[in-house]
Amino acid sequence: EGEVLMTLGIAGVWGPQLDRFNGPSEVVVAPTGEIYVLDGHGEGGNNRVMKFSSDGRLLLSWGTSGPGPAAGEFSDAHAIAMDSQQRIIIGDRRNIRIQIFDEDGTFLEQWTHFGPPSSIYIDEDDVMYVTDTQTGALPAWYSERRGEDWVRGIRVGDARAGRMTAFIESNAEFVAADREGNVYGAEVPGETLLKYQKIR
Image 1 (cartoon, rainbow, N blue to C red):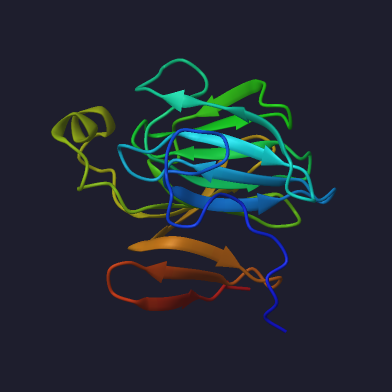
Image 2 (tube, rainbow, N blue to C red; image 1 turned 180 degrees about the vertical axis):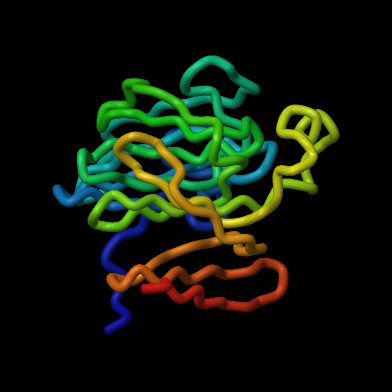
């Protein structure tokens, strides 16, 4: 009915303090009700994950700005998702990797073959969809690292093993999928929502 039930942070006030955000880019809610806020948008973001209880109490925070390769260093942390094991999947965009943590912020592993992630969506079967809108936009060192054949798109894979299984060439920055396996990509700029129908 439009009633505000909870507010995290302080409206119009930003900063590194734990009661406020700098550039929150995405939120994921665990089946148990805990709320994970990824506060990392932009080069000057706080680049951290903040975990709240279901009633909005801050439980813990982890992460810092950095180029890596250290675990927990983020640069333009842009996407957060949770798989069926309740692992926290972070799209560390400018570091061109996905970092994976447990619910308490302990680093588990990282994947670099999904490109610079702008958005991550994981369905109930642990099929993972990752968008790349930064290929061609990042500095020259990125192209040198990836090779000339690396293109923008939606990379589809297995969130349990990190194996990539499909690719959709696309300019979508945000992604979701329905229960039939159709994929929806939102283009920014362009203000366009595209549907990619799964071939049976």
